[in-house]
Image 1 (tube, rainbow, N blue to C red):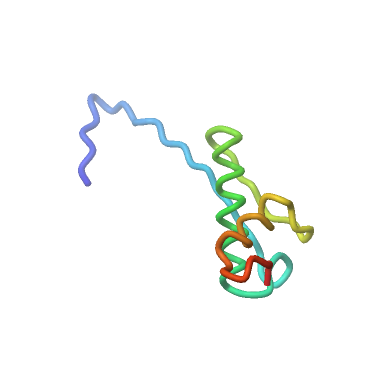
Image 2 (cartoon, helix red, strand yellow):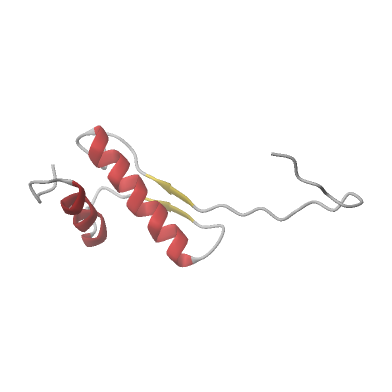
Length: 76
C-alpha cells in the first residue's frame, strides 16, 4: 500500500488492542484467542487508542463469547 503524504504531513494513526495471557486467563488456545478478541472488542467500544487486557477472573462478556464459539455452550 502506498500512502501519498503532502509536504511532510504525517497521517494520524490510532490502534485499539486486546490482550490475554496464557495460562493465567485461558486453558486452551481457543479460549485464549476468544479472551483476546473479547478484550479487543471492549477496547474498541471504549474509543480509539485503548488497550484492554484480560484479567484472571472471567468477565460475563468473555464467558458469553466463549459460549457462543463453543458448540457445547460452556466455557472450556
